[in-house]
Each structure stands twice: as structure tokens, then as C-alpha cells.
Amino acid sequence: MEDLIKRIREAIGVEEHVAQAAIGHVLAFVQKEFPEGPVADLLEKIPGAKEAVEAAASAPVDGLGAAALGGLGSLLGGAKGDIMALAGKLSGVGLDMGQMQKLGHEIFAHAEQLIGKENVDKIIAAIPALAAFR
Image (cartoon, rainbow, N blue to C red; front, side, top):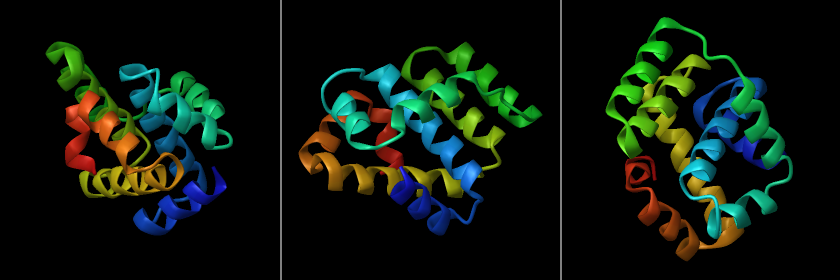
């Protein structure tokens, strides 16, 4: 996890606790959408990933914009709703849309190093809304 946190901090210019929270929210999202196979393998290969997912699940969402995006996500439902809810959570930890895209890119690049491009492709195929963040 330390390598990934460092990578995210350098890419998007945030403090360690923000990077860790953002990573936790993204990993929680992919685990919810695709709990088996490559996602389970990825979580096993990132030390501290399960703890980050648990911390993200119990973290309050701050900010009016985050609440609005999360509420919009609930109205949309399904995968589109879930990605909007994720965007709300990431906004709540202080990320803007540009940082969210870089965050996704860096997480997927790190994942490719750990589980291979083919397995990351499987995750994207299972959760098409993530393709924009690759």
C-alpha cells in the first residue's frame, strides 16, 4: 500500500491520508461491483488494501457537493449510480475531476504491475464505467 500511496501522492499532489482514503474508496467500489476473480487477487496483493476498504466504508462523506453527487448516484441506480456515488466520495475527500482521473489511471497502472494487463482488462470489462479512468 505504501508504494501505491506514494504513487498517488506524487501524481495528484495530496496528503498521505487523502491518498489512502481515495484508494480505499476506489478499491471498495471495485470490490462491490466485482468481488471475485481479479479484484480479489488485487486486494490480496496490495498490503493493507482490505483495511483501506474497511476504513473507506466507515468514513463519513464531507461536503455538500459530495452529498449531492452521492444522492444523484442513488437516483440513477445501477453502475452509473455507483460511479456517481464514488465520485461523491472522492469529492468528499477533496479531489476534483482531474485528480479523480489521475487517481484511476495510477491505480490501474499499479494493478497491471501486480495482476497483469489481462486481469485489469477483465475488471474494466465487468465495470465499463471505469474505462474513462484508465
